[in-house]
Length: 195
Image (cartoon, rainbow, N blue to C red; front, side, top):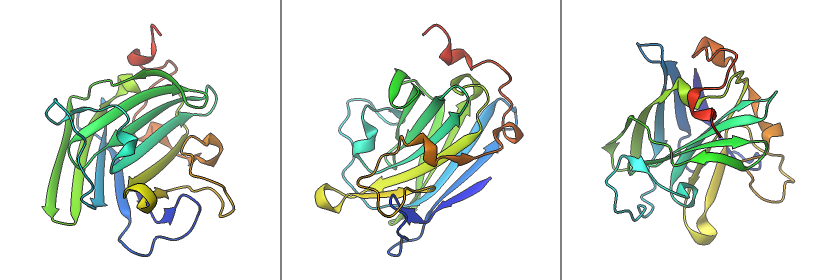
């Protein structure tokens, strides 16, 4: 599956750079979702960290980042994945709207390459244990810039009269045939248990 983020958070078209491209597929072992992000690189300041990338980073949404959300609309369980062009990432398991159940979970595979000065490609493998059962909706976002130049982009945006960006508006998510990528079954993945 391929997606292009062509609009700002409020439905205005992006006109000053090429869109972020997201590709979702299944790994050869059929046990992980493969994500590839091909995005413009805006050269925002990197997160300051004692950990070498790739590594989880708290509040990564405050930096240049691409975010993917996978929602099970019947339970309101959703997985938020954030990826930085500097090799950092953030994994959050959420319930309802913004209720964090777990965060800072590790990924075994995330790599970034920069084929040019204005482009980055991120590749990640997400284990089935991180996904809730019955995923049927999806949204994706890209954020860059600083202070009053901060820019928020959305695959499935809010209406033009919306007041401010809010990436946890679950009603804006759109249908995805997630089972054609990765069949989770009827129970949430292992990382959702024992909460």
